[in-house]
Image 1 (cartoon, rainbow, N blue to C red):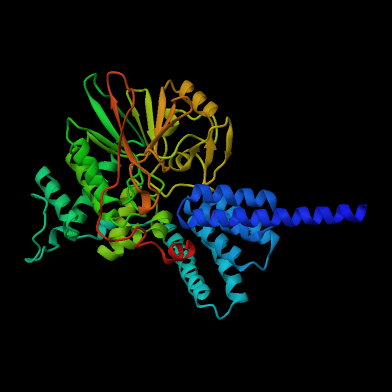
Image 2: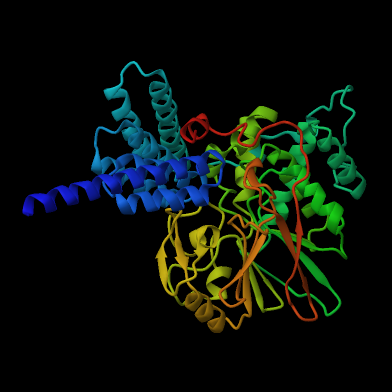
Length: 491
């Protein structure tokens, strides 16, 4: 009898294995269709039936990478290697996850392993060399940064004596100033995929650095009864969708104020055009056009996801350094009528943070790995109470009770944040007290999501949502300028 029962359990295990394989195949199909949420769902179901399969963890890790859940991707790759330390793809996955998180030394260790096991693998060697180059570059940058006399790029520029060649027929600042005429000409110029003269780009950057550096870390504005503001979420280098926002909602002006809530650059391959347009409007309407920093206005992200490569391709490495300096002066949060707080990421890893704490943040730096500045750029809401480890591997996830306590302590009504793709372009959670807005439709040319923006009126501060869909753009793929490790690691 015992023997029969053993056969029965073996049969059951075999059936479970077959079922798991079917679920994996189903997940693979969804993955190929770029439906990563369903791919994750079915890989997870396969893992419930067969939790000791390294391939399932590795596949789910890649799906998590595609949805920017780098923390979960790293955990799955690590699990795959615990199950089978000879599973080479697991090292690749873990290295890519660590790269995405800016943990270059950890990534290098895994690429070293692959090269050791496969000395003739050209792809592995290339990735190892590329990663090694970044590790050395970072060490060099740290050495320079510790030199206290670090000079601004501005000090080494002689903009006055930069000549604009006779054959350049594009827009120029008028007496060194941004005007509405200049902005309209520049937007049309960019629309035709033409490049703004480097002198004009430098003029904008130097002036906007001066304007931003005078702002507090928490900007506070008051809307009168009759006034409204438009809040936009991530735009991620999708220049033609940005123009569409202005077409649908009107150009920025003193009577049509905007707040763009971070992540202007990276991924989309027209990030230079997006950021110069936004900076131009900031100079034209400094009190009516607002910009907050996102987690992608940082060196690590720009190095991996395309902005650094794009600036170097269209201009120079020196100009990227100046962009980096300017990004450090972007404010971190904005409070409207003492009632609505806007930030890119979300709330905090610990209770008790006050608006006064935000005012005091010394923001002129690369964000730290933890603390309020990191949380403002990186955290995400979750449906359950309490806090959890972040799916991204940075900051935390915060529940409705966390939101409730924060709002109560600071006498606020609700928060508006961005940072996450939403199918409808926006999402209302935490009983209406946490609103997400995302303004890059069909994100990365593949997510199929709508974009949205929010109107807030001074009279009642009730959010009014406006959705829009992606418009065609020239045939330059997203991530065209991204680090080759990110492009190759995410096949």
